[in-house]
Image 1 (cartoon, rainbow, N blue to C red):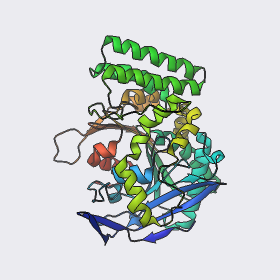
Image 2 (image 1 turned 90 degrees about the vertical axis):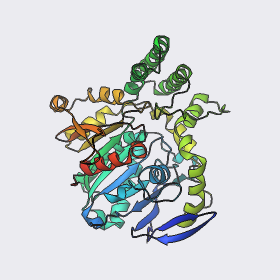
Image 3 (image 1 turned 180 degrees about the horizontal axis):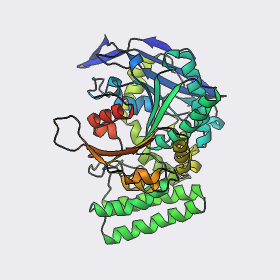
Length: 439
C-alpha cells in the first residue's frame, strides 16, 4: 500500500467550468489487497478544526450499508465529508470533530473491487477478516494515528458489519496483532436484528396513520412468515419473504419511503430480468438508489481523475449488485450476540436512530436492545432519557439520549435512515458527545 498525502483539491463550480483551490485539510488514500483478487479502497481526511491539530482529535472510520454501498462516495459526499455532491463545503462535516477514514467495504463496493467472482465476501466473518487486514496495514503506515482514540461509526448494514469488525478488532488489539486505541463503536439505524425490524414495521406504520386495519393485518401476516423462516434459520428464504413484506407495505401505503416516512421518494423499480427477482428488487430498493446519477457522475469523473490510482477496469459502484447478492445468505442473520460480547468486553457501544426511519425503525432497535443478555441491561433500562438541543439557546428538542456505563442510545428527532444527512447539526453534536469532546 502506497498512500498519497496531499492537500485536497477543493473543486469550486463556476458555470460550466471549475477551478481548483487548496484547503488546509490533508488527505491520503490507497488500496489494500486483503485477499487474493480482493482489493479494498480507503480514503482518509485529516481533521480540520480551527483551534485543534488532528493529533488532539479522534479518528473515525465510517462504514456504509447495503451491503454494497460506498462510504467513500455516499457517506463522504452526501453525509459527513468536507464537500457535498456539488463540491460545495458542508457546514456540518465531521472533520470539525475528528479525522475520518472512509472505507469501501465489503470488497466490490465503491472503488473496491474483486478480480475473481470467488473473491466476494459471503458472510460477516469474511467482512471482518478483510477489514482487519486493511486496518493492520493502515495503522502500520499511519503511525500518527496509533495512539489517537479510534471509533467506528456506521449506518444501516454498516452497523451489522461494525459489530463484527469491532469484536475482532478488540481481540486483535489484545493479541498484539494491531496497534490502535480502539475506543468504541456507534451503530446508526443498524441492521443488528432484521427480524425485530420487520416485526415492528406494521405497528410503526399503523401508529403513524400509514396503514389501516386491513393493511396492518396483511403486513403482520407477511412479517410472521419472515419470523418463521428466521426461527428455522432458513435465512435465504427469510430474505425472500422480507422482500415480499416490503412489497405489501408499498402497496398498502401508496409507496412509503422506507428511509423517511415523511418524504414520498421511494425508488422507481425496474422490472428485473434476473432469476432471483426478489434479490434484484431488494438491490434496486436499498442499494442502487445510493449510486444515483449525480453521485455516480462525480465519482467516475472528477473524483477518479483526482485520485489517479483507480484501475481503468474499475467503475465506482460497478460491482455493488454482486456484493449484495453474494451476501444474501447472511442478510437476515441477527448479531445481537455480538453486541452482547462487545458490552461484556467493556467496549463502548452507541446506538443511534432516526425517528422517521422505517427500514430500521426505532421500535425495532428498542426491541433487540431488550433482548441483550448484558448483565447491566436492567440498570441501563432504568435510566431516564435526557433531552438534547443543538445549541444552548435552542428551544426545540433535537434528540433524546440515555447511557449507562458503556452503552448509550440516541433518539434523533426529525431524521430518517441517513441521520447526518437529515439532521447534520445534531449528528455532529452526538459525535462530540460520543467521542467525549467538550462543546
